[in-house]
Image (cartoon, rainbow, N blue to C red; front, side, top):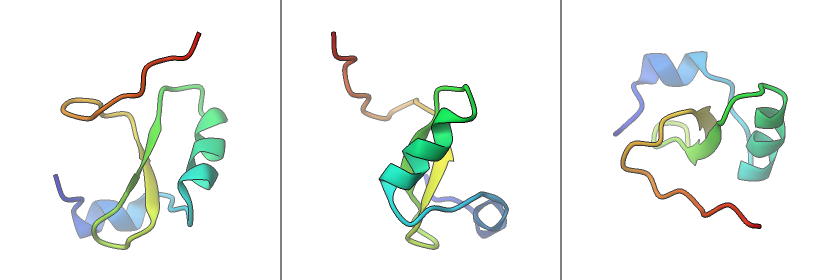
Length: 58
């Protein structure tokens, strides 16, 4: 799904996925980074439907 421009402009953006992951830790929610097709930077989302999720490491 492509992010609408109005949504992209309202979201915080990050230069790298690592920066986005570090910011996600502070929210206390299960967030994951994704590269936006509009701005080519990274945003955070809580959506998981249809997305590959890495298995938790023991």
